[in-house]
Length: 284
Image (cartoon, rainbow, N blue to C red; front, side):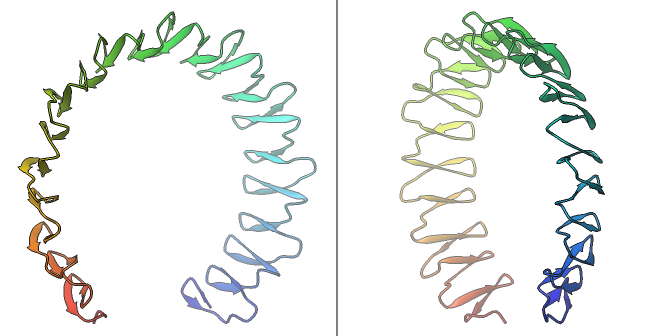
């Protein structure tokens, strides 16, 4: 067997510890060191330990006792204590953290690192608590909700009657989409490159130009007549049934079905070896 590229005698060994082979039934690898296993079943840095009786916190093995969790390098019992910001605190009724402070999320809320009385509040707007049933938070500002249900920057608006385009609230009427900061009706118009254009039969964009993908093809930002062409090779349209695109060059297909750099070849008889087409089934 090989360990980190170094050949080792396998024997009863079945695992590697760096460049050294060992038997994981009787030994354990911790921090690149093979140690006698005994009752140890886990590692704490380079030290082996028994996780039934000990706990590893911050790289230090400590007596477990009733402790079942770590707070930095300190072991604690999560049933009676809570770890907030690296500090172990009495749990009592506290069940959550707000920075390094423990609090009861049933009666309080943490907004922007500050514990506040909850009351009817159920959400945060920056460091301010608010009731999302009656208010809305837009751009860090709490505003009366009334019929407003959405935000446009720091402004609240009613998305049923208005639309937000480019940070500006505009009357919706029949408009249902945005083209930059302009609202438009996507049923009759199309947005290409930030410009609203008449849709008519056009259903796709080629840069800032609208075109009909049924009769035209967009290759390299240029609209070209489709005809029998169904694919692009750079800015050139071609028919993939009879031609193949290799390295940006359109070539007659014939029996060729793959590319080797800019050259087309038949994988049945040839191979591509280091960007060269070679006859046979193996690379020299």
